[in-house]
Amino acid sequence: SVSQCIPWLVVFIIEYLAIIILNLITIIVLIKNQKLQRRSTYLIVHLAIVDLLVGAVSAPEKIKWMGSFCNLWSIGWKNPVLSLVFSFAFPLASLVNLTAISLERAHATFCPFKHRFMKKWVYAVIIILIWLIVAAWIGIIMMSNDFLIHFMMFSAFFILMSLTIVSYVEFLSFRLFFVLLLLLISFPYISIFVKVRFGHLLPNHSEAAARERKLTSTLFMVTLASMLAWLPMVIERNINAYYPHLVNRMFSGHIFRAVLLLCLGNSLVNPIIYAMRLPELRQDMMKIIFHRTSNRSNEGDTPL
Image (cartoon, rainbow, N blue to C red; front, side, top):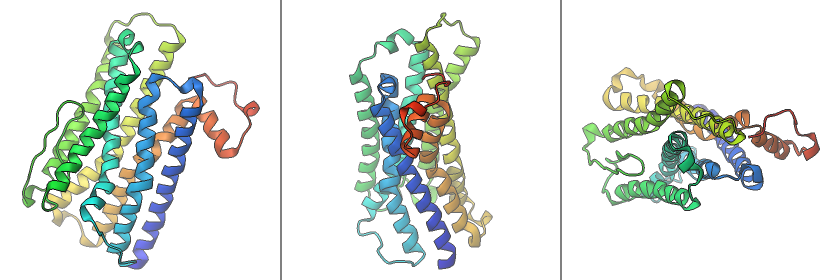
């Protein structure tokens, strides 16, 4: 009903505005602060840009869909394929970017000297590959004659697979996609943990080495939060596809909106984790939010 939809719309609008504002502040800080302008932060800046697009582009499509579904307005989808692309391309790009970050952190841990001298063009190639993967997924959707293919199974960087499926296994590709992506994201961090916990590490007492370790742990927290935010959506979609009788139809709409709110909330939690873990980033973000002057910054924090 309309009375039930309006509170959800208000919550979604608040979340999307927060996503836009916090990620925009994060981008400004990362670009303006020279101490944060290192190769290791290139993918973080790109992730913040993608998360900003989630709030600025994907959000209006989902709000438009929700309002139309609740009969609040009758705008509808003039181009349903384009609307589907706008709704899912940027959240998907965020996940692929997290995969790239996990692999980059593994390279920094296992090959620290090679990683230290990596050229900027390598990061440019990684970002291009991220969007090529997303573009390939978009192309498959736009070439399809219906919406039986909503999500394509793929793995980041080197493997791109698509599976055309009939309606009774409509969500199989989404499930396999998420499992593959989960493995690709998890394996590098598991390897890093084993290396740090049980492996032989070269002595590294430098500030740069400590900074890299802290950045790795911070990005692990960002990745873990994002995967946990996506997991309820995967579970809900599979239950809805294979065991619809388990969900009360009266509450199915509320359940979907709740998991969607949580899923897209991963674009909101990322800058919050950055601010909690990285003192210099936090200080500059607080200056922008509260218009603090530089002489009021907390000098007791450990620099990034």
